Image (cartoon, rainbow, N blue to C red; front, side, top):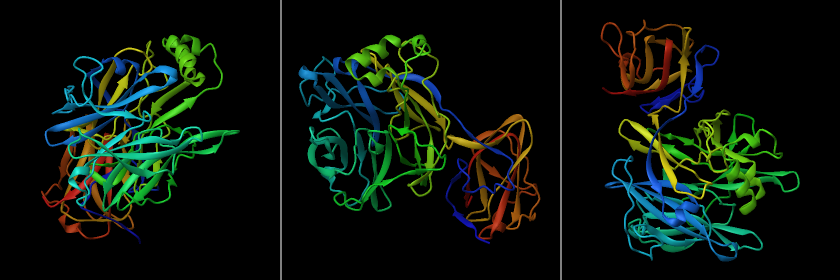
Length: 467
């Protein structure tokens, strides 16, 4: 019988990769993040017009967040500038006074690239050991090669320090690129997730996500359209794909989903943001009156085929005067580690001509989704697997009345061990032992299944370790 060799890597319970569906009665559940606090206010003149695509880079003394501000200029043009704010803990953010370009507002001189072609932006730190020191920071953005013909390209700026950028070369012209094109180095290759379209302008186009690969950041593969297991073909406005930090063999995405209704109804008259909708339709595009966006979650084992939850990971929330608009729920990229949790950020008041508020959202490590048992005892049984290390560690949570028990089965599902001690509490690293104090060492390297008996409990991830 075939088995899955998980070795000593962390495995998450976000999809059915490890699950034997014929033997499992526990249910998968998507878990929304928690809105925390406003961590920054974008209030210089250009920022009150618009702020787009915040993305975060880890540096030696903390974090930097890059974003684009843009404001209307004469003749319908816009001025796009790349700016940066900084934090030592991912919670308190400040605006550095870099003085690299003339300031538009006193105290707002945090511009690192004075002009770009569009509001798209992705800044990342290049971890390729062969990358020249002067190019360790890379910024990618859309540039129109021919605006009239709508010829587009993805262009790169490079920097040794993340402040002083030099315009470099074109990366690729195989795409649309008018989004955050998530790009990173992993396992000997660069990966870039970019926007393109399918369908046609007569019957309707759909914004999609494509993957390009390169070994040298010069020669790139042909873009491959991502596929999803939910059977849906909706508009993917962003992708926000990244290796998951605690299990980098898994890639996650937090894309914003774009929905454009075609008819204005009495329902639309009741939104608190109706004034912003109507003004945006008049001054930007008519579709801005009816377009709305939310956030979804997806994960992949190969970077091309994604398990995508069809329900929203995050919605615009209770209606206010500044939400349920085109531009809500655009998450920052990638995740930021804030102590025992992960954080990401979203800009609120996106469409209002007013200061923009940056809010932090927090999630449990490995906590995007889980398998759970609520008011009835359930079981989760894995497919046959092999592991390295004797100590099973769980990311789990129960109620005071809830529990988890673990036992080992052979590959055919017959019991090999008795049940573990009762596991209860709420921990991202709970070691599992048997009543005699032993661990799972006697099953290391053998093909076995694990069975979790659960009540009022959630199981997020597991890993085997030596100790």
